[in-house]
Length: 330
Image (tube, rainbow, N blue to C red; front, side, top):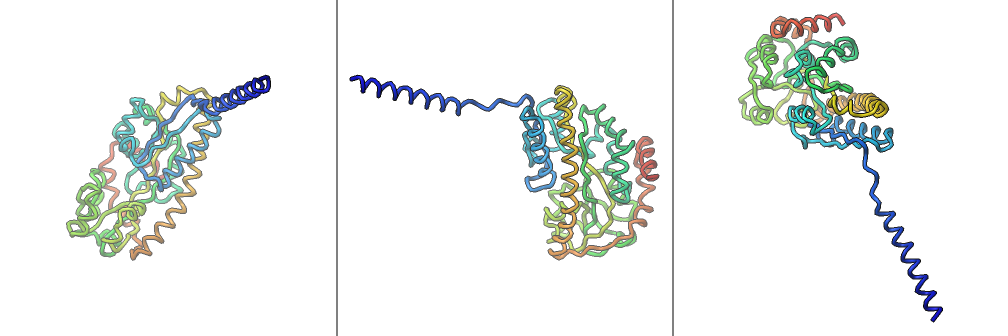
């Protein structure tokens, strides 16, 4: 009888220990103090998303889990304008955005002015210097978004089915452009026949001969399979631009100083990480497009810039023109 009692007691103690262990395992991990919803338009394989995931890793590690970063690629939280509005409303926190910011901050238009920059080094001097600081300050003042860092974008190139080396070669060329008045004015001045069109219509329009050419960075030329309907990549380099990673000012200010530093430091690290990926990707893209049969054509970019610049300056407001003149001095 006593042996049975001891056995029963031992079983109860064992069950209690097991139950305690199960409860300990079931205890939820402590929730983060802050959550950053980071939405953007690129897909999972894009270098921007890889950079965003690197930012997530750095922030969560260096904040000891006090900040959780949730990354939403593929426009899961909406398109670029949706994301800006969501951050302003406080329903999202971060995104990657560019010249769309000029809808609020006119100086942001400088992020996509044709022939404003001749090379990556000149662009870096502008963005990291006083010009970039002025643009960022106006963005924050007018939108409530704080630029944390920036990424260089691949230059826009002209694709066609005939070689284009000088502006004279553009005569009569039916060229698709985005619905941006500055782009239309620039290509008209160069002698082409620019046609604003949604990008979703470009492949079919090229296939059917409705248009003859289009212009975009190499990454988009590849992802849209334009090598199937275009033979030449004419290296016009007509727009060298950048894009910002932004965070809502109210969200950033709601964090203590030590966590704000974690976010800013991780953003700087993200920029270095993305820059390395960008340089590698540009080389990969050129090889990939050549392998698919496209021919790369050297272009007289000085002749293009000289002919386009009067129309470009005419389209800019005085504030933008002053910034362009300062960029030229770099």
